[in-house]
Amino acid sequence: MRILSGIQPSGALHIGNYFGMMRPALELQERGDAYLFIADYHAMTTIQDAAKLRAATREVALDFLACGIDPEKTAFYRQSDIPEVTELMWLLSVVTPMGLLERCHSYKDKTAKGIIPSHGLFSYPVLMAADILAVQSDVVPVGRDQKQHVEVTRDIARKFNNQFGEVFKLPEPSIRDDVAVVPGVDGQKMSKSYGNTIPLFATSQKAAKKRVMGIKTDSKALEDAKDPDSCNVFALYKLFASEEEQREMARRYRAGGLGYGEVKKELFEKMQAFFEPFIARRNELAADPGRIDSVLEHGAQRARALARETLNHARAAVGLG
Image (cartoon, rainbow, N blue to C red; front, side, top):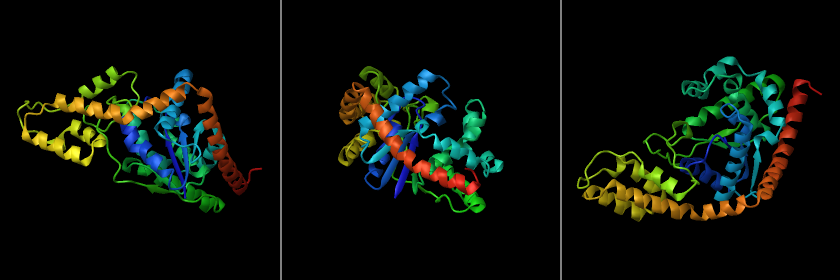
């Protein structure tokens, strides 16, 4: 089973990225032939500063390697190191109906948030389809809100196959209901777009603690009983605490006499303990930049071998070469 995942280098990764995408990716590398790419082409729809894009791409590579991606088990690479993907995108675009792209949520959502509408933003789903189909992925892990991307890929692949013959396998979305939806400091889903994140690797402990202490809560007094199930702080605490610790904290909420500030301090301590090994690993990797380059180059070689085979098949099918 071949599995493909990707993430944009569009800003500092946060704990929502870790529990929503990174940890599932770590688990998947034990289940099949895993491919993970840094979507730097996709990021160009929002980052149009060369130095910023290079730096952000490198930071994402560091983050994933620090959190446990094994380059021997997962082909880890930059999207831009696979030029076959962009040529394949053109071959796919000629069979992609405009109406299909016009129905995609991502374009509407991003333009509604003020991102300048461009052809790149509009055709984003075709490039994503090329990413997936280039390596002939069987499974694409996505959140429930991203399922449409895989459905669009299947539609495009089906249209190409109907027109030119069987070239692409149809990928399946893998949606895990047990993947946590991590709330941000304002209670909405944690997202770089909302500016409500807690960084995975903060610049300092002081900066990380400030974000945690700023998590939005209700205005109940110290002595009041509180509802753990509706509390953003408790939702984050559950990510790091054992089941026994969760039960005890929930009891303290309901008993009254517990201040949100105290819970935030306990949350911060648990976060620090959880990520401490990752931080040490990241510092070690950051001191050896050549190692990062080597990992990404090796991953690109593996991915390009598959992408080249797929592209040659597609070119022959449409009459090129």
